[in-house]
Length: 471
Picture 1 (spheres, rainbow, N blue to C red):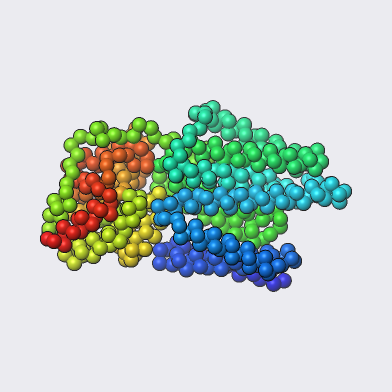
Picture 2: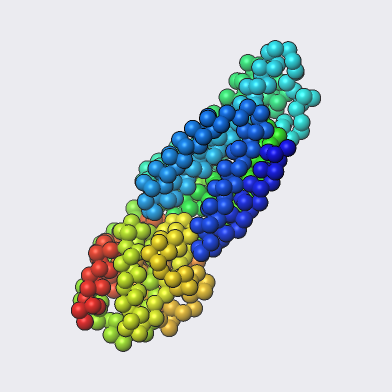
């Protein structure tokens, strides 16, 4: 059948798309491959259904594409984590609807006397994946939108703490299992099956909210990555429910790649996967560092900082979320080009979660035509800080906080960081001494080799650039 060939081609395109997403140079073409694969997949599914209405297909795709383009164009780079979270949620919600649609069809058959809805009429895969899809899809939907709102600054707290919180989650989990067993054994006829499915979805939605609610901002990137994996797992499970191989394969690809990314993120954030799965990892910090807590902080003007570059032969730029907010990537590139003309070698140190999501800074700097070879990962560039004349930290905070190495009581202790404090001079562009995403004090600002430029990232870089041009 033609649709089977379309499924095969779509699967290959998905795999090649993911492979090409692993590198900045090929990421754009990877997106194109995956998009074409999704188009073929949609056509294949409709052909398999045997009711292909090309007018409805084209109209639906045009509407969906218009919405997608609108969201993509209107979403700034700084809001990319929120958009990823929302899209994860929609994927989980779609999988839940697929499982509910299957149950509605089975209930209709039961009421017409065609089949008896129990384990004898369902395959083992369906008996397992129907409740799994409802559960994981529901958790992904509500959990992702909870993460979306937390990233937007909503500081909602879990009503319970510690063991009581985990106890509530365990009770809800056990309740889902019991209801699921009752549901797949036929419940009490069509009404009982519908009621059981509704309970599973409601409990799943509650679990998604409760699991994400206590998680602090510093750990939110890990949660977004994990929820991305959940959306893939829900998609694969829904594929077993309706017997669609492509849905199983594509869901498995997303689930597996999401788990791999989650492990990378856990390592970068010094969090174990067990902490993430249990929830409550690093609750939002309260009472963050205040300006008055800092002592001996030295500020400088752009004119004073420009003098430091006389004779400097090496410079490392550390981009952070503040650079993204200020849209200062083009100004950074201009500064880079000017310093290179003056004989100063410029490179960029990229932390795995700089900008709150992996690859965030890479994409932002690539947008400004910064050469790829200048973007170096943390492990590759950390040994070079000791021999570097000047480090410019633009809007980064937690990823350069030396407390992660020295203070065992710090919530970020053990988190791999960029060793900027080891450079000869550190220039930090920041609006104020307010805490970063983790909500804690940064001892870097008090070090004798650190100078603060209290300005918006873009304005501060432009002022420094002007002084260097005038020199």
